[in-house]
Length: 167
Image (cartoon, rainbow, N blue to C red; front, side, top):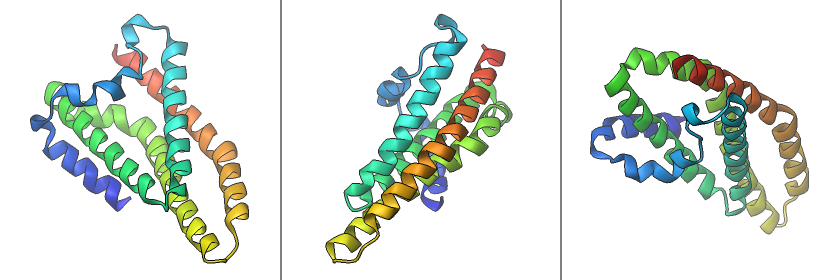
């Protein structure tokens, strides 16, 4: 969480120095709300968050380093979005639109990254002939499917409602 919060602060503080073009690929994954129906927006948001979370977890096979990098980049992006939207619409608007779904989505995605770091830790232990890898993966996938995906669906529904209200 420290890395995520620090990177939000960095993204926000560097917001005026970064062009929108830098994040064009990330933003292209989400359909334009005015040109899409509500279900398309919801589906895009949920699938994007589920895939990102799964990648955060699975990338831990590379000794746990990529999930840390992903969480920093994700936080930086959130900070940048807060700066850009806050400059145009006010920081109160940003908080009012980010907080309702962010309290669910951000901890869930952070948990995925933490599980990825844990996976890297388990792999290192497996290489040192200490067990637990299979059990860790099984338990983590169970948490991902039974807890994280439902939370991301709820967060996506809230985010979609917020988008509907403000477009």
